[in-house]
Structure formats: C-alpha cells, structure tokens
Image 1 (spheres, helix red, strand yellow):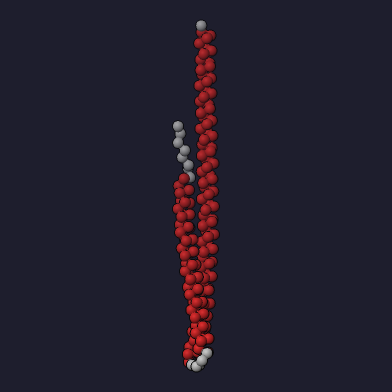
Image 2 (cartoon, rainbow, N blue to C red):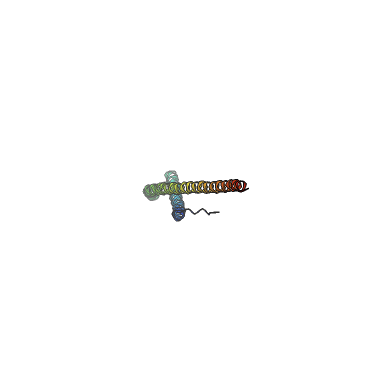
Length: 153
C-alpha cells in the first residue's frame, strides 16, 4: 500500500515553529503588561498614602516643611504615575501587536493544515480509484478467462 507523503510538510513544520515563537512572544508581552500595570498600581497606592499623610499633617499642629515635603512627594508621584501610564499604554500596544501577529500566524498554519487534509483526501481518492481499477481488471480477466476456457471445450 502506498504511503501518504505531503510535499509541503517542511513548510507546515516551519509554520508550526513560527506559531510557537509567536505564542512565546505573546506570553512575554502579556507578562510585561501585567508587570507595568502592577507598577502603576503600586504608584497609585503610594500616592494615596502620601495624600492621607498630607491630610493628617493638616490636622493638629501644622509643620509647614512637612506639608511642603508631602505635597512635593504627591506631585512627584503624579508625574511618575503619568510616566507609568505611558509605559502601560506602550505595553498594551505591544501586546496587541503580538496578538495580531499570533492570529496571522495561526491563520497561515491552519491554511496549510487544510491544504494537507485536502491533499490526503485526494491521495485516498486516487488510491481508491487505483484499487477499483485493479478489482475491475481482475474481475474482467477472471470472467474473460472462464469464457475462453468454455469456448476451447
């Protein structure tokens, strides 16, 4: 029996490797986004702490220098938060680009897998056709062989 050999198997193998690399890149981009979001969350919590500290400093005995330092820390935190928000935005864009790339690569791989399936179906049909032809020839030979044997008697 003939063995099925997909002639573009090496291309399919390359597509599978590219897809696995794209999955890894997507995972890395996702991890980076989560890391940047955690940094942003920590900065927001720190700013809230400074704001709470500023409220506490405004009650009771007011130390102007401490209040100024606290306000400066709040302003610094706001600046850091804006910068971190930009980092989060960049990470989101990178994640979206990695997702799009992964999607494109998956579509290419699926296309090649469909082509392989169609080639296999064609192979099976050709094999069935050849088998049917052999059976027909065998039946025809057997039938004609008996006719010739009957005529010679």
